[in-house]
Length: 99
Image (cartoon, rainbow, N blue to C red):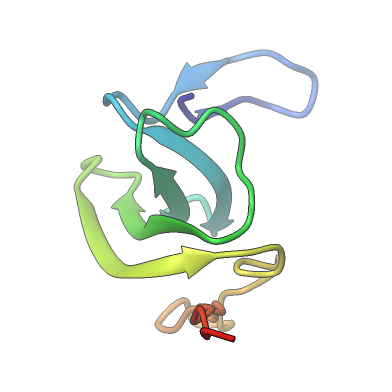
């Protein structure tokens, strides 16, 4: 699963990620940066309690960095999650608690 972007009319389709992971739940900041979740290739559908990487990509140079390794559940990334100046990003990480 890779991330693509395009214009609202469907033109200018462009693949953004190129790797062996499953990349989902992207959110952009002013078309300059993108934060997204990356699952292991063995995960075929995003479901709760999965280990994921929260990753940041500069859309100028396509450089990707790992911001955090977290446990995903619904609500981890809600849009919009960026601060207005693009210097901060909000997300939720869940912790599994034994019964």
